[in-house]
Length: 433
Image (tube, rainbow, N blue to C red; front, side, top):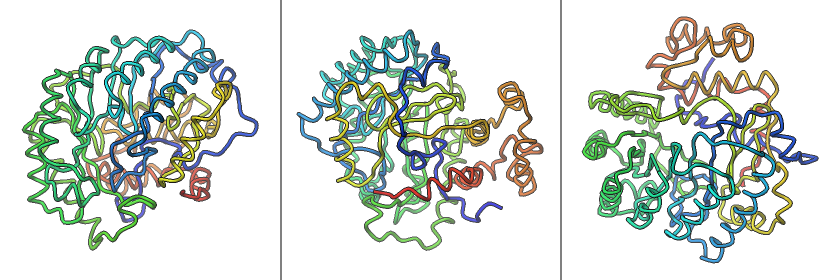
């Protein structure tokens, strides 16, 4: 049965990138995509640069990169885009996202070049499709936001984490409240349709009162979306290298989560997942960002790409030295290298079913049994009889296709529990570096 701790791990993707392995031989992208639907793809562009590395961050990013490396990255990104475009042929993108790192670490002129790569080389319609861009308090400046809005950005996501400087610093994020307020004001002035604001609970020293202050302050900006993230302390991160008080940490995080959930529901937000809350009055803008469907084209050294049968990327690292080594390797590659998939995971029919299950079940609306049967020809309960255990525990409704509130708050335990033995084994064999 599921481990007692509700905080096992965040399955933002399945299979997890630590289960990826180098391909031998490397498959050609033209072969990988030959039989894939390409009329409504998701374009994801990874910018691996930040002005700082937050203490909780284990993403693939480099802080304070020299200007010449940023220039070289954009040049190499264009080479990769050319190779990807030739491999996919006449592809159409239904939505796009720029993540990182911090895409707005790029200067305004560099952002314009990034858009030119996406539109001029890949043929993405920007503006024209839903587009999300991640930013930070230090880089959400009017000149950068002007470039984003000129290209039709529909959603800007900003990681605030806490409106108290002392808590932000405890999480390894040396920001100032005045800087946060300035950034939020600039985003609102830019009239971006959707502002998403991230907060973190479980920070060392955080109390219900200080958490409520951050919640109330966030609500004062009336963001269209709010994400509530539990703090995790991961190997090779800033917090992972220093002591963090963990007495009754699970109980503290669960209590703060429930406090945040109730505050947002009372304020008119609809819960979409354990983390995501969206204004109930906000119309749906295109497909769900956490959709279980395949068809994602990743551009950049930390981006994943998804087809129905193959997930692939470049190498993954966390530590500063290893991230720089992977980035240097990406920048040194000849253009011909981008015609191939480098590392990844091949999904057989069982893993495809499992991915659909996990990515659906961890959403508030649950799994659409009819859509599942149409896709795979079988019933979810027949493929995954263990779902009945969730019903017995009170964590899923009868049938096991939709989590109860008690189950939704245990998403970070249910996801790992549903992970296959093969993926678990591959993840366990990965050496964090």
